[in-house]
Length: 594
Image (cartoon, rainbow, N blue to C red):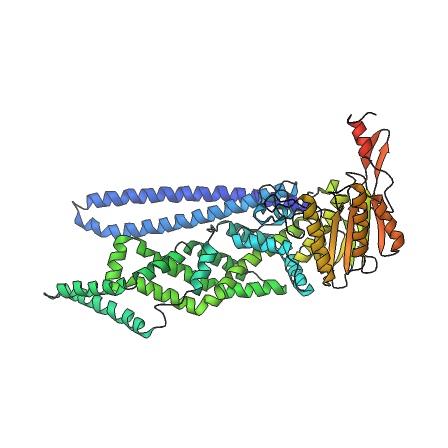
């Protein structure tokens, strides 16, 4: 699975970031020591100031210098975390190239045993396609990736736009890694997005009402003026207290709404600020593909606005400090000022905010495809057609190690539409079905496929390979399979073109009934607009080729038994399988007498 040049790229980057990490740690230690020294100097100057009062004038300068070094330390620490993330990415990619991708998110939360194909094809879960492919770190980015792998796009042009973007990003591995490293810094709560969406839908209760704008401009000016005047004019203290009290009364009428408003957006400032960082990075890159140019334009539009929103939220959080809250609300109606500015921002930008956020998620997904293409330069970007034609050469399963991957060719079209594959146990039938299905999922998502050449239709995939029973729904395995087959036939009768992948039809009944039912099902499939691949041990299904010449074709995976040894070449061959191995294996293992 390792491509030498790709592995060398990650090894070089790993060495570079290891050195960079060591250098920045040294800088942080130096800055920390300087901060400590400045703190000691401050204490010494403060102590000596009691005997030499002029030294007190140095204290503001010392505090200013200390604040500068605190800020520098914070910036360096942020950079250190970013470098650590980039270093970890190199290590993870090297492991993935070696076939170990267990460190990636498995996507197990997206497993749906009733999905038309994702459960059968191992799209989600441990050792799944999702775990191998995904490089998204945000919650919605992961969800978008899951949607791409489980939903057919509407148009061929949609697939082509994604392919062009992924192909371009494959040539920009540094950009992909920077986006991934920046997204690793985002810590989202489970309900962050839903709360943000709810806040966007809430009507304004301050902004847009003229009386409030007037009050927020006049009352603080009057209060601050009276308070300042009270220091110089006797008798105004009571009026200053009264003015501040009136502001609290005014605020009190809205305090419940203000608290609710703050609850919805509290804690979002850091997350939105980090989204803003990614948008800023995206907008700086030059792109040639249409989709990435579009995302770059959105990023440029949203970068400053997102940071502005984050800054407004950060300012609003000042109310969490009790003393600050008491002082600034008494003088400035601070809570209502913040609500006004946030509602003003919302009125101007609400319809764009989620689109800006989704720009980051879309970029994450496309960077995942770009990284996948970069890691597998021998994979191809498929051609997608509307002619219901499937033509593949050199097909393999992308998760298998390259040295163990056996490649096969296949062809289906509306006239030559049903392939029946017979063969022994472990000969490769199920792997071939999954290889075909997984690569079509990749193709329609916009990613490269594990093949030398790949031309596939824009088509819905339906499978019956690992049908699950359900105790909760009081549904047996056999009935679950029938239910899956019924849903497939219902769609075909409605005229929906399908790619149907079936592995050993009607496993839950006796052999005679299974054979009769399987033959009847294949005859039904032959009359509808579908491409079908069926893997079976039932050699009787091979007779259907004579009933539907040219439409139904027999293929097989053979087992080889020589010198009392069993072996497989995993090559797809024309015709019906001639050798089976169940009895041989039972004798070999001592289950039955030899």
